Image (spheres, rainbow, N blue to C red):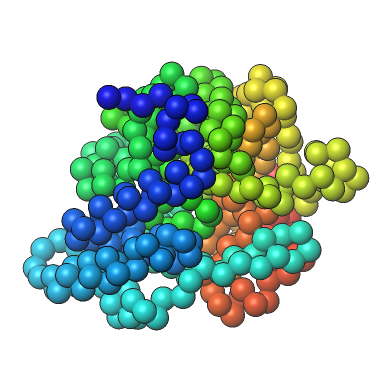
Length: 344
């Protein structure tokens, strides 16, 4: 039976309920002892203490079982390649995600993300609209990723699936996919924008800080099937701070940003970017969308400490996989990266 999102849906009834669903999904994936499920478990273990406490024993057992078969003949998948690297380093040697605040920015050391498949994030596209052959490209309907799905049901009158992000950088980091079998491409249409606006507003009634980020093609999406990344940010990301002019403050955000409190206004901005073939990132929070125009990925020289600025970085959450660089990050370095991204 499909579940209808709202106050009657247990999964989205509170932050704790959503976390319990993440734990259950992760434990089930670990019990299957397949490579993808173990990678999922590692990501959850390194990202959040509460989840780590619940899954540490099953993760060690599943990793040991899967490791014994990594050298068998057969095709090397993304997941087996990742697990071979983890085995070389040692599971217990992987560092937990670290976070610090400096000058209003959130700096994060996330070494596990150095192992994630780059997929579309390493390309140099020349358009934000590209047909996709999903027989050759990753998509969320693949059998091997169904054990990563936390929930599926009716969400604001559309069929939707919520998957766990295997390489998380935020609390309860997820991937929300409408009509997963339809294989919609990563190109936003008016109905999807209106739907996302309503979904975020509705879920946030029960889960404070629920938000969703969107990366257009050429703005560092790693998957070309339509999706947004969901997270729980109770205190808000830096772009939502009152000091910025787009929120009524007196300071200009160092990256061009427009904020709209009406979905139609937000769509007019998005439509202008689409017509101009300009890349962009979006952050949806309850009753507001933050919009960032930017240069195409691959069209400028990004700093070696960065894997690419997508929606989270645009919103002020700055990630590096390099421990030495993490200690050296400053607000000035962030602003220098933002300057490179500006459309001339």
